[in-house]
Length: 276
Image (cartoon, rainbow, N blue to C red; front, side):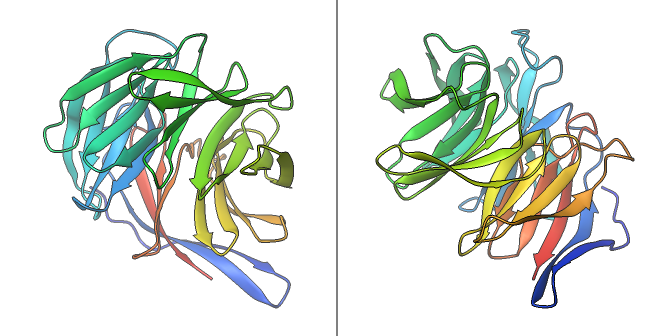
């Protein structure tokens, strides 16, 4: 692990307040094609989905890495036998992983695959979110659908022609926040399934995390992180495009105010401290 000097990326909304992301650490580049990172607060570890190949190939090379909150890689292949794992969600002792056309379940105590459910009609499952009741939802970028896992079967929860490349999904209560990779549009889906636009970031919109009361961070795969306030106004906080460092499906730890960013072709995870 390389400890780096702190580097702050800051943008202020007028003179009222500003948000800052300050670099904490970077892992060593030992997590091949790191797409998503997820905090397991119960076990105090981070899971990192590693495609290790092409995002759409069923090649059996994918894995899940395990990283300590200080950036030390505990295991680069804690769980193996996947194809091209992307978004993840957790409920109790089950880790759910989107893996192209199936949702895979992994036991967090053992790292063993305990279930795998094919999602009929799916083409490119991307992100996963789990609601407070343990319902698992998966977005499909190529079909514009959100699927829900029920037992060992799935069904379509919501779909819309408005989506051009649905990616990040976040369940909050009975509502969802959704970002579109193709357009950078950020949506809100109500409990009665009404879709509205709540903001816009940039093309390549990937992950979305809650960082306050109706405040969000949205990552762009191309290497950007945006803050979106309660009014839907967005401002760029980080831009690593020039360094060719991606920012894929992010995670946020509200207790330590830490944002974890998988760097995709950078083969690792970068951590920032968030303040405002």
